[in-house]
Amino acid sequence: MPTISTQPFSDQKPGTSGLRKSVSVFQQPHYLENFVQSLFDCIENLHGQTLVLGGDGRYYNRPATQIILKMAAANGVARVKVGQGGILSTPAASCVIRKCQALGGIILSASHNPGGPTGDFGLKYNISNGGPAPEKVTDAIFARTQTIDRYKISDAPDIDLDQLGESQVDSLIVEVIDPIEDYAKLMESLFDFEQIHQLLTNGQFRMCMDSLHAVTGSYAHRIFEQRLGAPVGTVQNGTPLEDFGGGHPDPNLVYAHDLVKVLFGDNAPDFGAASDGDGDRNMILGRKFFVTPSDSLAVLAANATLVPGYQTGLAGVARSMPTSQAVDRVAAQLGIHCYETPTGWKFFGNLLDAGSATLCGEESFGTGSNHIREKDGLWAVLFWLNILAVKQQSVEQIMQDHWRLYGRNYYSRHDYENVNSDRASALVVKLREMIPTLKGKQFGAYEVEYSDDFSYVDPVDGSVSQRQGIRIGFTDGSRIIFRLSGTGTQGATLRIYFERYEANASQHHLDPQEALADLIAIANDLAQVRTVTQMEAPTVIT
Image (cartoon, rainbow, N blue to C red; front, top):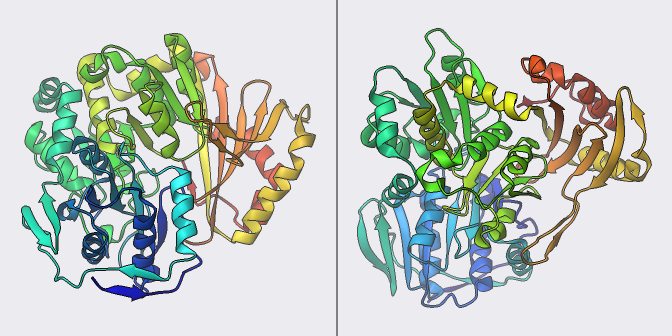
């Protein structure tokens, strides 16, 4: 089996969701191979095992799939289940890993980042529970990338990724599978498809699903239009393209502008949803109404028993630290625990495996449950449709009823993208230096109750994750949070989160930017955001 000499690349440290770089970086000789070999070197008992492989279909997905299959063969893997055409959404990959009890899976995606020859590519490893590899695994992979001097790869020809069934690369059995079937069956086991079918075919209810020319297009056509009876055309931008049609496959109010235009336009449908590049994120809209991801998680938790898969109730809920505390209020009412974790879906894995949490979510448009170990965009859409079918109310009515019962957590995230990395790091360092001095300080009507750099002790395995975001909490429960994101590929993305609780129902109609204006001003004064970023306004506001 050919062994190729190589030298380390210094920039192969995985972020919160694997290794993400521009396509041109991955196309460098030996770059992808070095990382994959380092991954294989760090997987215990790899020889003779089954792996799952697939990606979101972005540019370079097919060539990378062929390379990985040949390397798997050379490293003694017995079987690889690969999605037809090299395609598997991230939730579907987690589903298949769990169903076939694979050792793990390699997912090729840069999630919500743009694609195409000048766009981004990425690779991450999921472990046997179907979830992202924990930090101890990714740290070991990075350490190996820094000492690697050779990799193994078969010189066998490429296989036909479009033909379902089995073929071989040397002694490796490659099984090309339908990328949708197992996932669709799992969804049907959780939700009342018959009730959703009635909703979508009653002539009174219309929905629009925007797949942003990304991986969920095929899944959405199969599930919503073919299985659930929604009219043809319900799914827009439903043909997956290597460059996502030149768009940015991030389901938020800025990048999913086609959908927003439809839902806020004349004769708008009753319900709208979008998903991202690899299918793990979701945005929910009603007619002329946007549901924040934090509110969406809270509504799903409050109404979970209306859905067959969750009718016996929830063991607990979990949210990432920057996500609003709306779901905390639901958990308190239900008498269940709400866990606060760092950002990154891998932190939910232990809680889900231990049976401590059933639903979990992040403010970055990710929601999921214990059915897999990834966030799941179409699952969230089906969950909302199931609730709408039972309650026979509009999205806006459901949200307003929820706020009347629990109060409203006004919430917004401001993203400053492609900030000079040194300047962004200096801002964070300065804030860290200020942390011990802030308690008790008054900023207008707000008094600081606590300030810290969030650290997390995993309640299951005791592992510690430090420096996960700077929190400034006020005595009325309001919060400002600063984080540098690890999911971009150029410069730094500074994220600032604002939250204010409002119990008074007569004040639930405000625009969030208006309701949070005082906190936004405090954050700018405290961190000199405009000066440091050299930007007058955020790139994206959600």
